[in-house]
Image 1 (spheres, one colour):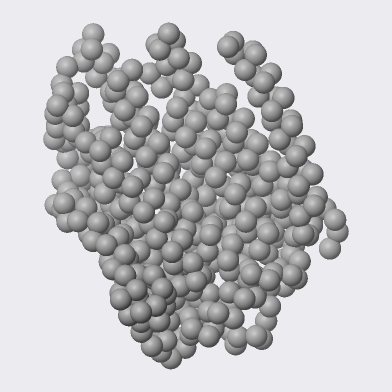
Image 2: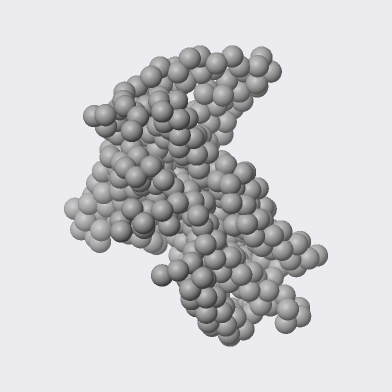
Length: 119
Length: 246
Length: 86
C-alpha cells in the first residue's frame, strides 16, 4: 500500500472538520450553523473508524464466522462511534430547539443581527 | 469586531490548525495497519463472555459504565428539548387541516410501516448477535412510526402516539439501566459488572449475560426518546402558533 | 480492490461535506446532509463497521435532516404569520 492511501483517510477527516468549522464561523443562519456542526461531528467518526481499520479484516461479529479464522477490525472505536452518532443527533435536536427559542425571543436567525440587538 | 477582521482571524487559526492536523496525520500509525492491541483484547473478552457481536459486548459489558453516561446525555438532551419546545403561555394550538395524500403514497406508507417496525424491533433484539442493537434499532423503530404521518395525517399519528406514555418509558428505561447496574452491586461485584446471569450458549438470543437486558433498556430509551423529540418538533412545525404577532 | 472502494467512498464523503457547508439555504442543506448520511453509511460499511453504518443510515440520512426541515418549516410559518398580521 502506498504512503498516500496510508494517510489519506486521516487527511479527509481533518479536511471535513476544517470545512465544517469554516461553515460554522461564516454562517449567516443559525440553522445552517447547526448543520455545519454536524458536518464537524462526522469528521470524528471518519477519524475513529480509520484508526481502527485493518487491511483484509472483516467486521468483528462472530455469528457467522469462526472466531480466530479471519482477522477483524478494531471493535472498540466502532463502539465509541456508534453511541456518539445517536447521542450526537439528540444534541443536534437540542441545538435546534435553542435556535427556535432564539427566533421566538429575538425574531432573527442571523447571528450578526443578534449581536447588534445585544448592543 | 468587523466581518473582515473575523475572516482574517479565522483564516489564521484555520491554517494553523490545518498544519497541526496534517503533521499529526503523518505521525499516526498507517491506515489499515495490523497492530490493534485494544481490539484484540476486546474480541478475546467478548468471546469468553459468549457475546457474538463484539461491539455489543464493548458497549454493554466492557464499557457499560460509559454507555450509562451516553444514555444520560441522551436523556438530558431530550429533557432539554421538551422544556425548550413546550407550549408557552402566549401560544395556542391550531388544529391542522387534514391534507389529501396521494393514494400510492398512502398505500406504500401503510404497507411499509409494519415491516419497518418489525425490522427495528428485530435489530434491537439481535443486538448481541448480529450488527445492530438498541441504539440503531431504537431510531429505526421510532422513525418507522412516523410513516403514519406520511400515509395518513397528523391526527392519526397523535392517536397512536400517546406522548405521556413515551415520556414515561424513556425515564423508566434509564432507570432500568441503573437498576441493572445496582443489581450487580447488590450481588457483591462491581457496578454494571456482567456477572449476574449465566453467559448461555454462544450465538443464541439469551447469550451474553446482562448484555441483552442492557441492550433492550437502551433500545427502549432511544426509541421513546426519538418519538418524544420528533413529536415536539412536529408540534412546533404543525400545531403551535403564537397568540399575537409582534 | 477494497482500498479502491474505500478511497472512492472517502472522496465522495469529502465532496458531500463541502457541498453541505457551501449550501447556505438550510432546507436544501438538509437534503445535502441526507445524501452525506447515506454516503457515510456506505463508507462505514466498506470500512467493515456494519453496526455504525446502520446507525448512521438511520440517524444521518433520516433523523437529522428531518429535524432541520421541521425547524425550517416552523421559522417560515412564523415569518408568514408575522407578515399576515402586519
